[in-house]
Amino acid sequence: MEMPERTRRNKNKKRGLATAKVVMVGDACVGKTSLMSRYMERQYVECTNTIGAAFVIKTWGIHDIAIWDTAGEEKYAGMTTFYYRNASAAILTFDMFDRTSFYNLSHRYIPILNDVASAQLKVIVANKSDLLGTHQRQK
Image (cartoon, rainbow, N blue to C red):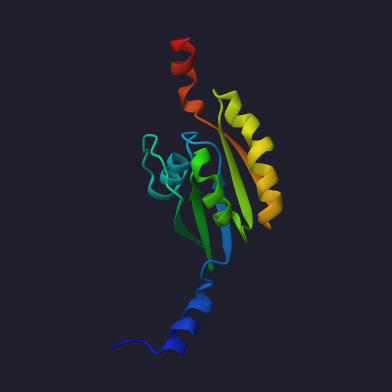
């Protein structure tokens, strides 16, 4: 039996459906998808290119948080700014072994976020610290 429309809306209101939007921002292959996958599914995924954006809903108590994983490739820049709109928070991610990915946070992503997002909270995450020993051995 299908639930009446009004009942469905009231049920969603009680749960606090998607009360906040968090966007994951940063260059391609800095580990945004891996961070989200590790957090949500306790799994690690190799570098995969996100086309446009992907999102998941995480429930904290009575609040549902929409976490958006945005594409980092320059060719998707016009499309990803659309996903930044109405974001409550942004997780700015960079690869700790790639200076350019850190530079791009302040010169590419933060100005766009300041323009189109209402994100009051911005968190900078240095990613790939687990590769520290491996990276030093490769040099």
